Picture 1 (cartoon, rainbow over the protein chains, first blue to last red):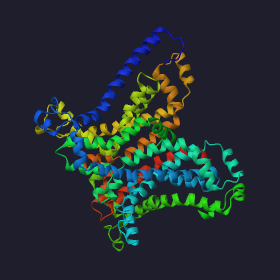
Picture 2: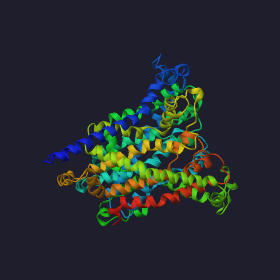
Picture 3: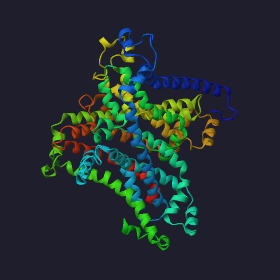
Picture 4: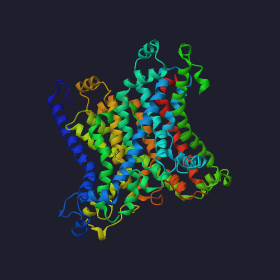
Length: 295
Length: 303
């Protein structure tokens, strides 16, 4: 509240006292906020037997990374993490690519169907996803049978990638088109006068200008797609093909008696997005600001 | 799409070559096709299926059911009303407590209180986590051997059930859901607040307005569009809520929610297509907030 204006001393004192209370309050709650995460980390560093024999708040007799080593060895966390990468990276790239194509057409050309196109994508982004589970599931099986390979889309990375792209592209389109509206029309006009065809206009002129928005969106998209786990539960029948967030669900049931190991697994699963958040915090927030909503 | 591409405004028509038209058709066509096939067609199919009996195996086994699935839901299904009630509680809690807290938090952080950047990160952290992870993290709080059990002096052998206790589990679940929601709302609001002219606040402060007055009389009115968007998000999130509860219980019996019933009836008892009917009911409830949202977002384009 540094307004740099002379105010009465009483007012300022009052304000100071209030600010102190507010800050303390927010500080205490920040601790409450982060505590469950810290507790999980703490749990992951202790062996299960310690808690069994000495109690929940016992002084730790052993603190080490054994649970992490075991999580990787026994839970095959490495395989699941790889699956997550195989699914997430192409999904993000395709989503941004498709989103930028639609945004490009909608903002650079005055077609009559532009608004409908934008509505098709933005409204699609808001549909309750459960509305699509059964038909998509059967469509994937049906297309596979038709082409002679049942596992073409169902139980395959490709199918999962398609689904992620289909469901995220609406948001990407919306964000990128509102960003593209701020790019002056003159740039496009001069490109057209210079004889650039549509593809070059998109690839060489517009795409480089989109870089900040694409960077922000890719961070956000990576987080969302990496964290999503319902589609993988529905579409991946082989556990060994599931991304880590879906696999955690099964591991939770299997390792119910050794939850320190599970804690290590959960921390490993959470770390990519958490690290990304702290390293690329600016991009992350910019992504949300650009779109300002996501259902 | 093709016919549409040929009717752009004059200037475009003259300058578009054949190759350009082809490129534009592909630019529009491929993503649209994907969107239509994966989203819109399934949505329509689900609406149609909600009027049928089908075990989901062979197409020829589909039987027309009329509104029987809906009748069943409305008249023979107490769990539906429990779910509605839970969704309503969820909505009320988010509207009256979680969302306002997120907004106030954003306001305080925007004022630049000590350590605001740090707090911003902390409060936002839960939003970055997958719900699969969140379920596990909160289990370490409440399950036997968890922190809360420890605080109550119950070791693993003498633990009490918290998730299963119908007297408190509603509040525990809403608390965990808010843990995520508050940070999300905070960040959305914060991005809006950055655009409020600081001179307005200063002028009010000079006139001796209190914090609360500044917030109520200056911030809230200036933020009108953002307020509505946040309201809509809160509405839609509360109607669609289910993943957290699914992660904790795995079934809708303890804490039924609409979306959870859809999911269960898809995965479990396929014969009646009741799941599809639930999905349609959910869609109908969401439609007004969705349209409100689209109208705000496309205000300029619609003119």
